[in-house]
Structures are given as structure tokens and as C-alpha cells.
Image 1 (tube, each protein chain N blue to C red):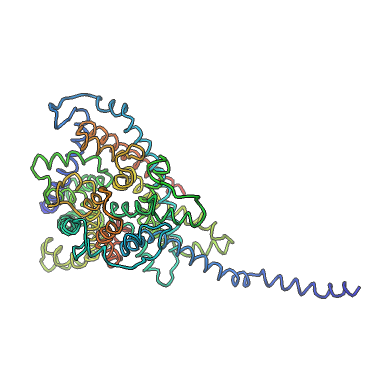
Image 2: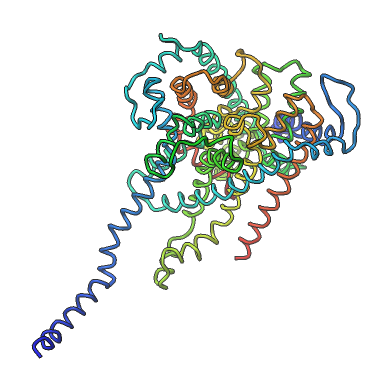
Length: 285
Length: 311
């Protein structure tokens, strides 16, 4: 009896506030739900057809694919670079690690507001620095004009926040590799690049898989940074932002449910797929 | 002939010099400073990337509007003033009425993330202990389903949670925000604590059982004191996650009585009339709580994150 007693608060919470809502989303996606314009009725795939016909929403799908591609690649590559750089012990390494983690710990909204000021077209430091480095001829409006540039610049803000987590996870994996493996490789004449490729990379693959999946879920869900840096304009909009707008601004709950269901399934399929693929490869090595 | 003679004489010396210069010892000598410089530069670049935006917010918040709105930008606050902080904290100066909003929303953030942290950790300790130490039916099923919700995106629950809270009349209450946070943070807290409990030798509890202690007593008197670092890790991570929330409070709170600081900072940003000096001061204050916690309790965070991600 005792184990069930210990688990009961957990089961109630997860059941009532995770499983029931998920099931509700899966069902209501097939209903017309308009709180200000009842009644609610079954519409089959009607909500989904409406999504595919709405260009703001289809735009946000393509945008989100770019957010994910940039986010996963950049955070895993940068995380690996930081982990490799911080792998060897040196004085003040603990301090450097603590400082590197900071962007992960701060609220994404606050970070986005800061980056909005950095990207500012008239007084932003990015314009100022690039201009004084003669990399740009004049000050630019960075956000909201060019679609892919806007998306990449917004994703950089998310990468800035996600990378410390990847760096820590990869660093832990690197540190669990026995040093005599590297010794042996050096005796065999392998340089740092070769021993990274032949020893480190295969052994940190599971950690890279974990980081990739975490970045995937976070970037599929990107909202805060887009809300601050892009607003609700379709140009740089993400699916999460469109879900928010459809549901809570247009008050079309059925449409929001349908969009949510599609994204939940996409998240599940993509993250399971990525984990399976990367773990299998890791075992094969 | 003489030249040839000379050449013949110097050649071996030159060859020897070359051999020394390119030998392993010389290579190490010439590379060590180069490699050291390379590493220092790499670490400097990493620190610049990690800290520059934070520095930039500080820089802007510590100067005047005319010091911040300049092109080219001032890389150090000139003039250096604390006026922005004084006005957003309501210690004089025109603050666009920000001080009231900022103060109240900070209080809301403390209440919401603090309560969510406590409830999450208490529930997670009991659950993780059952998963780590006890055998019972459906254990694996329950464990896997709880951890599976780690991969559940906000999409899956966003609209239903709003409607549940609306139907219970809980929209714009602390309770709604706290309940939603707890349900979201529990899986990660359980994963961290489950891994931590598994590192504690069972002999410790068995000694207590021999003395006639019940499992609950063993948990409270033996396991929890030993597991303090793991509990601290779960608690601090839950608090940081709570402090950073934006989307859920955006839909679950409607006025200043419950809106956390993230919602208020976003609203101030959206107004487009608040000067960047004041906006950055608000941002720095909103980021200071998690920032200081992350620096001071760094050890627990690193341990919690790595325990929660690997295995």
C-alpha cells in the first residue's frame, strides 16, 4: 500500500494536468470550439483543412523548420566547442563554467528584450560594432524585413540560452572518457583532431543525441523570443506563436487544438526518431 | 673553392640546427606558448559570447538616456549613473509608473516559483523514493509514463489547462499558476532525485530497518539528510524554471495581482515608450534573482543537469 500512497500526489498531478489535457487536445482537435460562438460540434478534419488553407499558419510551419534546423545544429556544435575548450583543468575553470551557465538560467523573455536592444536599428550595439569594424556600410534594420535573417537572428537568442546545457552535458560525457585512451592514441601518432574524431566523438554520441533532442523540443516550442522580437507578424512567426494567436486572440479554440495535436505528434515522432537513430549508431561503433 | 669549403663546413651545422629546431623538444617549446595563447583566446571568446548581452544590459541600465541612445555606441556607461534603477524601484525620478508594477510582479514571481518549487520537491521526494527503493505492481508503467511527459511539448496541454482553470474559476489566481508549474516540473525533479537516491547505498536504510524503523522513518531520518545535494539540485532547477515561465502565465494571469515579472517586462517592452535605460534596469532586476542563484548554487545546478540528462 505504501508505494501507492507515496505516488498518489504525483499520479493525481500528472494524470489531471498532463494526461487528461493531452487526451482532451487529441479529441477536441476534431471539434469546432469557439467559446464566444457556441455550440461546439464535431467537424472531422475541418480544423486541419482550415489550417492548411491559412497562409500565416503554413508560413509558421516552414519558419519553425528553419528555427529547429538552426537551433539544433548551432547549439550542438557550439556546445561541443565549449565543452572541448573547458575540458582540461585550468585555474579559474570553475568560475568560467559558472559564468558560461548564466544564459541558461535567465528568463528567455528578459534575454529577448536585451537582444532586441542589441539588434536595435538606430542605437543597437550590433550595428555600431559591425559599422566600426567596416563590415557594414550603414546601419541596418535587422528584424522584420528579411524573413530568413529575422529567423536566424531570433534563433541565435534561443541558441544563446540553450547552449550552456549542451556544453555541460557534453563536458560530462567527455570527462567520463578514460585518459589512457588518448595516451594510447598519442603514442600511435594521432594528433588532437584525429583523437577527437576517433575517440571523443564516438563516445560522446549519446550525449550529443540527448542535446539534439533537447534542442529539438525547445526550438519546436519557440515562443518567448518570437513574441518579443517578431511580435505576431507572420514574417518570423513560429507555430507556437500561431497556436497562441489562433486560440487566445482569434478565440478559435478548435483550430488551436488541431495545431497543437499536429505539433505534439511531430515532437513525439521527431524526438523518438532522433534518439533511436543516434543511440543505435552509438551502439554500432 | 673557399666558398665551397665554407659551405661544406657550415652545412652539417646548419643541418643540426634545423634538426634541433624541428625536433620534438623544439616543437613543444614553440607550440606551448602558441597553444596557450590559443586556449586563452578561445576561452575569452566563449566568455564574451556568454556574457556580452548581460554586460550590455548592465551598461545601458547604468547610464542616461542620452548616454545610451548614441551612435556609435558607448561601450562603457558614460555618464555612469544609477538613475534608471532609482526610478524603476521608485526611489525618486520619473519612472513611467514602473516601480509599482515591477515590485508587485517580482513578489508574484517569488510566490509562484517559490511555492511551485516546494510542492514539486516534496511530491518528487516521495515518488522518487518509491521508484528507487520499492517493488510494486505497475511500477515500470507508471515510471515510464511520468518520464514520457518530459518530452510532452507545451502544445499538448496549453489550451486544456487554460480551460480547466477557467472552468474552476481559477484564472488569475496564484493557485492556477502553481498547479500548472508543479505538473510541468515534476518529471524532471523525479528523474534528478531518482538518480540521486540510486547513488545512496541501501545499507544505510537497512541499518535503520534493523533498529525497527518504518520505511517512512528511514526516508525522513536517513535518506533525506544524505540526499540533500540532490534535493537542492531539484529545488533550484524547479525555482529557475518557474521564474523563467512566460507563455503559461501569459494566458493564466490577467492583471497585476498575479502577473509574474516576465509578463510585466514583456508588456513594458511592448509599449514601445519605455526608454531602453529603464527597460534594461527592469531586465537586470528580473534576471538578478536567477542570475545570483545560478552563480552561488552553480555546483548543484551542474550536478542536477548532468544527472538529469545522462544515463
